[in-house]
Image (cartoon, rainbow, N blue to C red; front, side, top):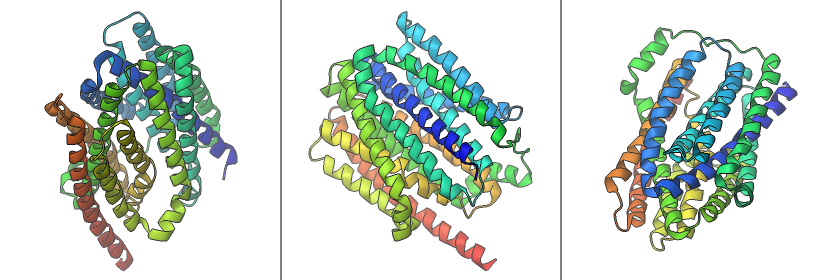
Length: 402
């Protein structure tokens, strides 16, 4: 095991998530000040479109440039685009706050996807289970650190000016990837799509396993999106000052990432004690009970609790369990199928949630209504988990017989 490589990637994961904690909190607060929480669905739709476009450009570039250098170049492009947007905001350019919100969701997709793609190339099946937990924990530490300093920095520098601090960190990320370039051989591409890959891509809608998995991912993402909107809507209603909202966002982010880190560290013991299927089944029950209980006392505290619970589950146990569902699949399903589920379906689900919010509009008691919808979605999520686990057991039995 290359300890230098492991330590370097841990540092990159930590710094990457520090930048996102600052970018996410600041851009969300700026957006709410400029447009109000009711217009967040429009931004999420723009993020979905932007993500699709950037993903296409990224996959084309990966055919010519190795993953490590592509990461570095992505950091440079992210820094240049952020500088332009921050200057536009300082000059009062219309809709610059909207663009900053979209930027923070797009740039982190690129950096995180490239990070995990490089890790998957650099480490094999024997070493990955021992190492990947360190990467997740390092990322959580970065998120916690960024969340904790978000409020104080916003008070001292101002919410918008605080985002300038992201630029030197992006430079460190770019330089760090160059330093790691010589530690592992990364091919320029993984090869063209063979017949099996092409078959998975074209027959995705006729693959029951991937369809059930897509339902699990989509329902979870819709729930998380609605919960995020509830939290933003309540922030706008209760906290009238921009810097107060920034501080609250930072606090909730720090609590969420602290809990995520704790669960990540004990997840091997959780899976060993209960097994992956039972753990995955417990998650819809857990969130459903939390959503149902908050309907009786809506407010900033209970809405924040929903936000923390949903994000914590998403960042820890659900993410780990979801990845385990890919293990018994063929190589083509793990690559082409995973890309379709975790990128395409993920973004379609968020866009669908945005459309739902736009249809609901500024209705009275929207917080209560979204809470009820979340409870219903948790029940549907439970049904989709049961469906994928039945397929999962069939695939395992088929492999044992082969």
